[in-house]
Image (cartoon, rainbow, N blue to C red; front, side, top):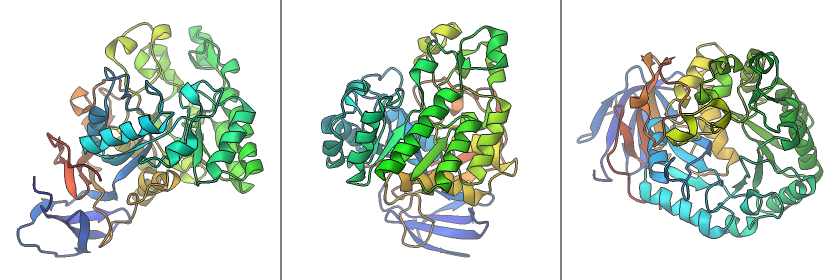
Length: 439
C-alpha cells in the first residue's frame, strides 16, 4: 500500500461523545469536522464506531530474543494491532535479558522491522534479573532505544538498598522503576490467592501482604529519593489503599491494573484449568471491586495487559506444573468495556486516558496518547462497542493461545487500528505485512 494513501473516516464518535469525520493523510490527522470530503481518499464508514487515540500498553511480553516458540516481536505486535494498540513497551525478561544497550536496541529494531506497532523496550533493573547488581541503566537510556522504563518484571527487586540506588540513578534522566511487587519469602511454592478457596483446594496461598508490603516500602523509598516508581499489575484492595495513601502524601507513584484482574476472580481456579494461573494470582471478588473503584477514582493510573504468551506444553499440564501468565492484547479493550464501562465505572474518555494517554506519559513516549485533533499523528483505534461475540482462537493473532477469555462472550470488537497513518488492522483483518520502519 502506498504510504501516501489517504483515508476519510466518516461519522466516528470521539471519546468525549462528539461525532466527527477524520481525514488521515501523510501520517497525520489532516482535518476534522462534519461533512468532510477528499477526492481520492479511501472512505471508511465509522457510524457507530468510537475513535480512540491508539492504545498504548506499558506491560507486554514479546519474548524475543530467546523464547520465540512463545512469541516474537512480529507475532506479538500483530496481536497488539489486532487489539487496537499502536505502541507497546516490551518487558526485559528475554534471553539474553534486556540489560544492555545492545539488547534493547535489538528489540527496538525488530519492532521497526515488523511495523505493526511502535515497540519501546523496557530495560532490566538488575543484571540478568538476578537482583544483585544494577544493569547498564545509563547506557540503555542513552542508546538508540532511549529507554526510560526499567523493570525486573517476573522478579521483584527485593533488596531495598538496590532499589534505592536504582531510583536515584533513573532520577537523573527522568526514568521510572516499574516494580513487580512480590516478597518471594512470603510466596514460596504459592499456587493461587491465599484465602478460603486455596484452603478448599489444598493449594499453597499467595497472600496479599506479599504485594502490599513491597509497595509500601517502595513508595517510601521513592519519597525519600524524590524519584518515580511505578507499580506493575496491582491486584489487591490493600494495594489500592497503599497507593491512594502515597498519592495523597504527594509521592510520585503510578500504578497499573490488568484487564484480567478487573474481571476474573479466584473462583475460576476451582476448575484447575491452568489458563487461569497467573502472577499475581486472580484475587477475591472484593479485590476486583476495589480495583475497579481505584481505577475510576484515579488511584490506579492505567490498564496494562501483562500479555504473557506461553507454548502449549507450558499450559496444557497439571496446575502445579503450569507456567504463570495469560495473553491479553487482543481482548483488552473489550474486557475493559465489560468490566468498567458497561458497569458504569468509566466512560470512553476515561478509557482513552487509562489505555492511551496515561501509559504514554508514564513511559515518556512522545507522539502517542494525544487527542485526535488536526495536525496530530494518525495513531488511532476504531472500536465497535456494540458487537457482542464469543471470543475464540480465531480472535488471537499472536503465537500463543493461553487466553482466559476463550469461549467467553465479550461486548465489542476492534475494527481498525491506524499506525503512522496506515491501517494495520482494517475491518477486523490484519495487514499481511508490516509497515515501513518506524524511523
